Length: 87
Image (cartoon, rainbow, N blue to C red; front, side, top):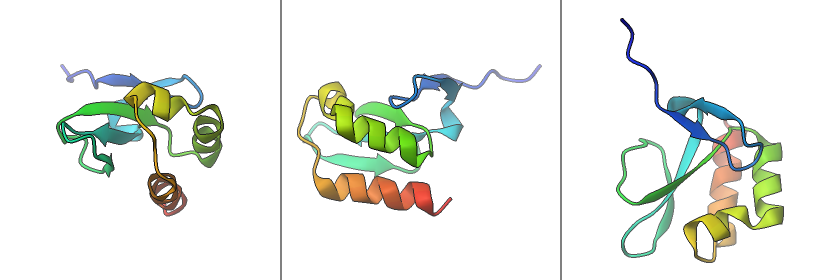
């Protein structure tokens, strides 16, 4: 029997997908925000489709900031744009 993939919900479109299909943004104990390419970093995670429209929606609504309870720098959003556009 195949192991069931963990499901996570995209913050942009609220669609549930396999964790592996989503981009994880993580806030660690020091409060540092980063794009978690491995999906294994410690900290509070938030998930996003690799879709630029989902990202723009999240930026506009400040949903990521609310979720991670911190200010998100423009660099993080730019990094996410880069990650999404290179796929």
